[in-house]
Picture 1 (tube, rainbow, N blue to C red):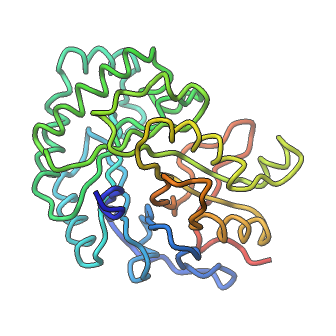
Picture 2: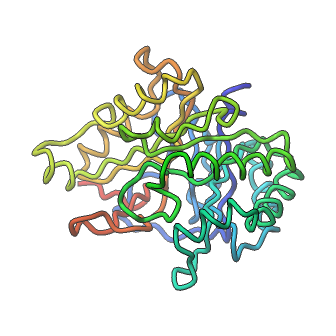
Length: 298
């Protein structure tokens, strides 16, 4: 498996190019040689060279599946691979199930049809595809109804659903993608169910200063998560990446995230989350705007 095939993504749905404020940072790929991808719903990176992964977030309920074909065409035109993060719920918050309902429904086969519908379309795509299903299962914040389960229950659900996906779309790769906390290993589904391990790394300067009294570097956050992930002998990727702060903070992160170092021999790529935060950070830190075009130059 090549680096390019290892990570994957899909072009964002409903792409529109937003006007950039005069003080915005340049929308460009950070310096370095690691493969770079983006979740890019505003289409800021549509014509930027150096992007090899397009990332799409997709619910398995209330989804317009032909949009995956549009995403495939978008990626093919730009010679990019596809990373599809599939979230097992609806994005309509008022209609979401509970964790117990989801867990029991998967066990009973009630969601097999949801996965089959998605996988049948993935099987037709021409781009290399990696499926990232039910990510950040080790997160304890409560934002996802599939996180912080009993590990055995999660592993059983993950295996069932990815078995269905691979049966219908045998050429896809699977990204098992914890947040990267100390308990992530409890949720490891086994070597046959993870072609690559994806991690999440966000740097928020206001959080760093409040919680640690100093700026955290990319390595401060990533190194311990990488050490846990590397134990499985799989390629490792940063599936979600973002950084917000003053110019020195942004520059420190930007100039580091794509560097290939001997400390991380299994790191094969990073994918930037080029959008506002969907779920507010705890303790009143709000919803950071990770978009590169809105990083103010000060």
